[in-house]
Length: 198
Image (cartoon, rainbow, N blue to C red; front, top):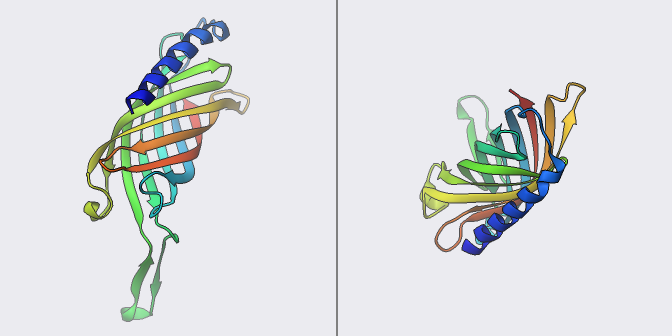
């Protein structure tokens, strides 16, 4: 993991210096709030039992002065679906009705901060780190830790939506890892985030 962080730090520094040729802003960009959706597949230790992954998120983006960098805050809901899928429903009628479920869903709430760097017009790299909270009814059935460190590097492309250019859509690819002894929950996911100027 130390090698990964070192690599990300070197890449961020290199791209940040290189991005200066693309940006000559005279005004500070506006802060943004974003709503994101992700869908992907699990990798690593938990991928055999929980192969499908996804999530929703709420993001805040704060440009750093007139640079190509922004400070990020995010939270949301991340889930992993058990092998064979998950279903829930009712059977019976009247007072004899009952519920049933098949399969299970491992549920987590991540709270993270990060940096977003525009390395070329519309193209960015980003990285988050923070804490992931296990919100399953019986946490011990899913993980060895209720709270764990989480990190998520990613790349993407942003483009304006509409004539006002106050709304942007980010399309990207990210890797997320909830770090636990013996291996945690990890995923590779496609992401779409709608960002609105504040």
